Image 1 (cartoon, helix red, strand yellow):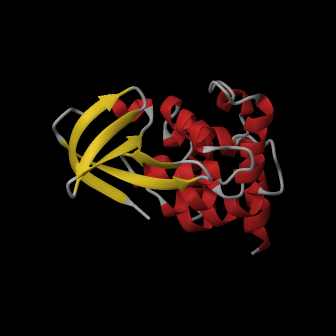
Image 2 (cartoon, rainbow, N blue to C red):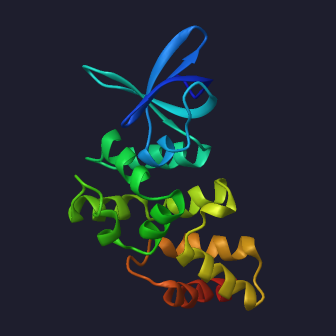
Length: 194
């Protein structure tokens, strides 16, 4: 597997770059949002995911480890392929996607061309329990605003950050359409049981 590539950018076109590494030129599909930050002939580092299909081998690259991890989560959803995952990361930031999933906003996700409301709902359904763990293992900057509000409210009531995250993880799977105030109420029920 190819996890990371570093080298000068030889070519840059819509949706992909060619990066030289070890004497080879790797064609790497990247989100449009990353493309604007990459300059020709300048060295770049891309975190990658290699996708092997029956008739094609493709390399997808991202500027941060959080982006590639979220890409892996997105393509783990049934009927969501790499092109849709890439389209989501082209249109939205990691934080915006996490927010849309944790706050149950299929209309936001379905703004991406090729992803209908049912596909967006499937992403939310399959990833709503995985997003808190993803947030915990990545940088705090990727916390969704809905979860951030819940954590801040719980901390203002005297609970630690770790207690707040643990309570949010417990309630994520039980209730599918909670805003932050409803999350606080449910989290408090779990925290008071201790």
